[in-house]
Amino acid sequence: MSIQMGILCEKCHTVHFIVTSHGIKPMPTPGMYVVSCGVCSERREFRTETMRPYRVSEEVFQTGHANEGEYFAIPPSAKNKS
Image (tube, rainbow, N blue to C red):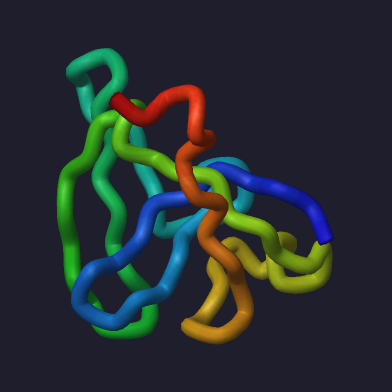
C-alpha cells in the first residue's frame, strides 16, 4: 500500500489520482484542474490544495482511480489541528 494524492468525487465517492487519472486535466489558471469522473460522469473544478492523501494498493493506483472500499483517507495530522 502506498500513499497517493487524489481528489474525491463527492457524488459517487471515487478517488481520482492526480498522477495516473486520465480524467484530470489542467486548466489555464495555474493550480486549477478539472476532473471528469468516469464512473458517474460528474465534472468539477478543483485547486491542488483540495487534494488529499489516500492509502491505496499499487494495482488500484495504476488504474487512475479507486472505488469506494479500495482506498483509505489519511486524516490530517494532529499537529495541524487548531
